[in-house]
Length: 252
Image 1 (spheres, rainbow, N blue to C red):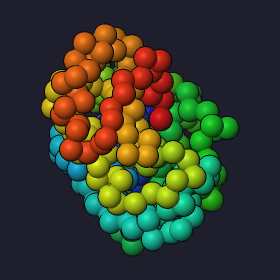
Image 2: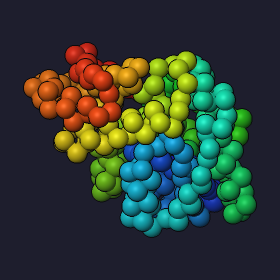
Image 3: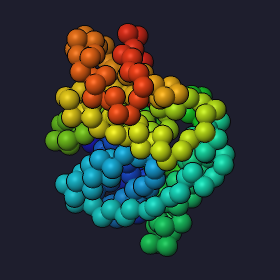
Image 4: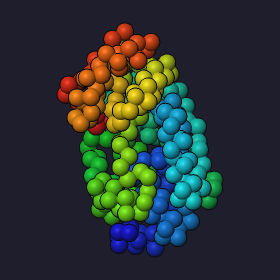
């Protein structure tokens, strides 16, 4: 384990972790448990997360042998989230962090940590502001651990998430400024589930009106283009038209 991270847990012996089941929060949880800290994980479930994310989180928490609490959040009840402005992530993160800090404190955990790492660009993520407002600590970032460091350490630790693709919430599939509805999110989740079942990994299905724009990593693009007709037919009940993006960019 990273020496600075060991030192962090030597000082901070009781923490709650905002847990998504992704690469970063999984490694943070693992490191806390390995360091002998009193730690509990909190997963916030909303319409922005597909069902498999919670299942993955439960399985990983069980493997690490850490208690996991699931909290429901109605993020679309906030018009500032539903209307999908440029700073939607900030308002959504407020709901999530408020829910976690309240639940954690009720359970006796005064410090809440998240999996933000040293590679994350604060200027590119409106949600960072909410972390500061709720006093959320980011040990991986504080200790200088980059995404590459975390994947490497996760692999050495035998964590199943070491090569898990980054997964942005379903709201990112809808154009900024376009109202987010449960129906749109359900269509998106169904479409991505279908493509996952076809063997694709690390992709996004963007909603463009009643059409879909499928973005994949470069190494999957040739296969997707070769199977374009098959993909279009598979998604035909959800969209009028399906297009494979020849210039993939799936960072969010």
